[in-house]
Amino acid sequence: MKAHAQRIPLKGWDGVLAILRLASMAVLVFMTVSICYDTVMRYAFSAPTHWSLEINSFLLVYLAVMGAAEAQRFDAHIRITFFKDKLPAKARRMLEVFTGLAGMTFCAILAWRGYLMAAQAFEYGERVSSALGTPMGIPYALLPIGFTALGLQFLIDTLASLSRGAPLPPPDGSDHIDATHP
Picture 1 (spheres, rainbow, N blue to C red):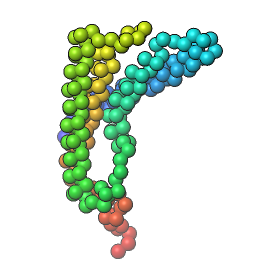
Picture 2: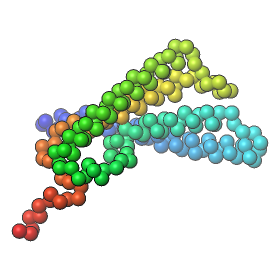
Picture 3: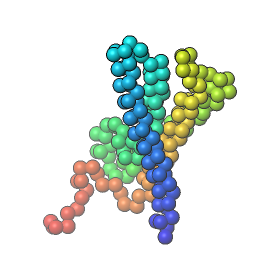
């Protein structure tokens, strides 16, 4: 019963990340089509679009910020683990907890500052000085959303590290006991 109760919130979180993943795929398809369209218009018809660069710049920020939580979920961020892999299991777990706490702190600060930037941009009506004139509050709002999602994923990872009962096996398998060989 307890394992089932703990899994329900993660199913909801999995659903949120699935929505962000699908939105990211749609954004990537849109970016590909619009950049190809702009290229054809620019070089074949000498009539470039006035919106493609601006929109795609903001969508690139979307992809980077919204994809971070998904990358953290699947442990896909780039890192150097040479020294970590040499540590004993308990020290590795402590390092994971420290990294999670540092990640949550970093994300909390960026989410808070991003919220302040977005609120100020909406309050003062800041816009991009271009023909499209995108309100700056829209791309700024991506920051608190994305970093809140990444911070929540750090929280989930940290709680998982803390709740593990057995020590972590080393990555090279040297602690592994083979029952078939005495």
